[in-house]
Amino acid sequence: MASKKKGLPFVVQPRLKSIIEELGSEESGIIKIERKGYLTVAEKQFVQNASEDDTSLAQIHLLSAKVAKAKGCTVAEALSSIGGAGDSSLLEGFEAEATSALAAMMVHQERQHLIHAACLLMLRLDVEVSMDDVLELHPDLLVALAILYREEEAKSIEALEEAHSAEAKEQSEGK
Image (cartoon, rainbow, N blue to C red):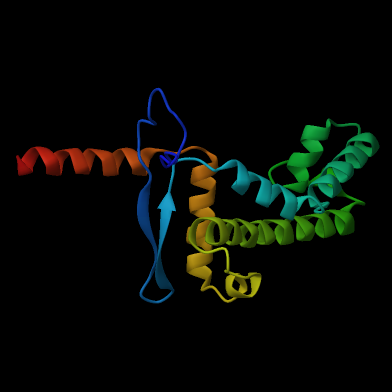
């Protein structure tokens, strides 16, 4: 019986191959992880499932609408004020709510870093990695994984193109 060929029957193969990248430092520890230039469907689903109960964004938007209605400004102007880039006088009378909403947003962002790191470690390195392992990471390595996640989410292929160019150059020099 013939063995089934693994993989999709591409008519045209993807232009760039994934690369193995080293993240971290001597201080944080160094790991090798695959950079693909995109997030897989499973990775997107992992993050979506882990993030679905977060209400911090809704809290910010509700406060923005409340401020806009009370102060006669647009929701965008109120949102800008809450974020610190707009007219701070719009928040008079809403200081406690704004502080609470911003604190929730900061917790949300830190939680997203943890979720992104867990996603990449579990789905690209080892499914046996636990959240306890992620929580024990050096902060620099956590940030490096979060940056890799964001770059993959943005479908950044710069690193892949650089690796491809370096490989092509090595091959042409070796001939």
